[in-house]
Length: 75
Image (tube, rainbow, N blue to C red; front, side, top):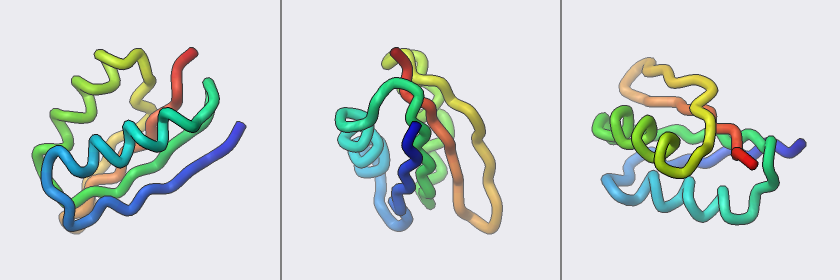
C-alpha cells in the first residue's frame, strides 16, 4: 500500500478535486492519499466526491485555515 501527499493550498474549486482525481487515477486500491487545501468549500466537495467515486474518506480536519483530508482508494 502506497501513501501520497498533495499540497493544494491556494487553489480554488475545482483545483483541489482535480489534483485528487489525477492522483487517484494512478493509485492502486487501498492506497492512501492525503490532501491539504485552503478552499473552505472543499469540505463539502470531498464528502460528495468520495460517495460518488466509491473512495473512503478516512479523515477530515481543519486547523489554522488548512483542511486536511485522507482518502483511501476503493476497489
